[in-house]
Length: 578
Image (tube, rainbow, N blue to C red; front, side):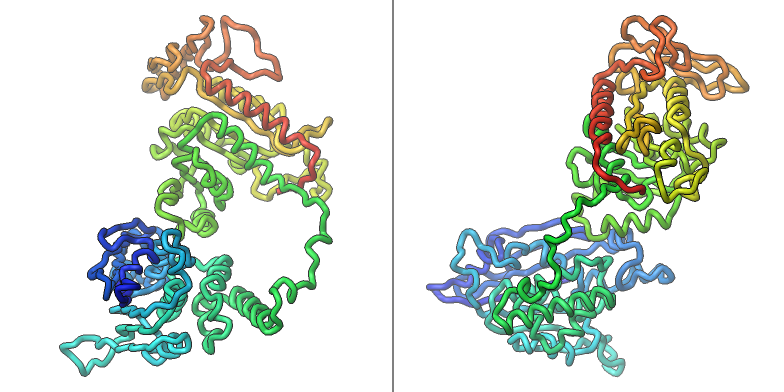
């Protein structure tokens, strides 16, 4: 995929000023990573009289398919071969438009810090695109570019030069010539290349309207083919097309009246509605989970039962979390998460941080090993009670992250939901909902069996009678980074494994299939615990205490985090169920 921009100059105004406008030095060949390949910028010629900048985009078709998941041209699920063998690496399309915006971002905005006097000055330009898909042929190319002041050459390319009787293809060789500001010329290309191709390689979301209007400012509102441009650019999504056309009409009316758009569109007074909006319980829950994860210093995080990816989106906003894996049993939920997170349009550096996988917590999965933290947010209540031991073993026994955060509804609080009939659970798919005592009992037993310390905290305002709407448990593995692993046992025999804990203690685990209890010594105060993690030489644990004492700094930080969550979540702000 190739595009060149050429300008001419004089001794007083050398053509090499193009390098200042593009923010790319003519003496260097540069390359940039994009979401679907590599973009190269080079200058085949650069002197005072003539300067040419070339953008070469190398597209990785396999990466395009894996990230796009069938979106865009050539990506139909029933055309498996067509997803890999197509024209996308060679013909200018939305891929090239996105590369223009990424590589020449400052130039497209009309910014030039080094030579600000060059901005806003029309310069002679010649733009060449060797292979451009044009659904509508050369005539449509003329109709789109000529009203913008360009001299247009759209030369149809034959299907095969050896067989002229086959006729022309739908591709043209495009040459544009004219005097124009460079920023405006780049915006013309950014909008009209995918319009001519009539396809996009990524999901067209509502924010595409803003992108179109920003790039089309100053020319789109008066273009005779405005409706065609808007419809094709927005992938013929009717709601988005209507919104864009209405906003363009507002801009036209504002220009006609020599007024600001805000003065024309003033029927709604945004300051009238000043009532405090209720905070959704789901938002409180995400913030509580984030608070715990921040305090533990976790970098690699599992979101188990990630659903539509709301927590993943929040994690991506914080640089602390360098690797995020979302797992769900529902492929439909994963596809919706991919769409909501806009993975197909995410910068490559950002997209490397997240991975979505399909899997079930009823089975062990080696992909889940080695992570700092795992989150089960509103997950356990969707599991049949008889399958909870399998989930427990898969997460705490095999994956064994340093920290596990679990949230689940507090059934006692259900009486406070006016819209929830008595005796009903909050969601039709909930297999059960626990009281506070039931949740603490389950969490305590899990922590004891697998060598974790557990602390509890509320999410949402705490009712003095029935407690908070959501309850949170934070499990932190004892004995440092890696406790002892259990040896294998067969036919009820004992299996014993020994490992050195990060704080100098020895860890003993119960073997797979073993029936006898192992012993765990966290290496602090000489306490001895049996295989269930219950203290033998230490003090008893009260109903409000952790089941076992934390022996690492991460345990202490997690306790502080849960305390902080309790303080924040029990505020008096309004809330709504989610």
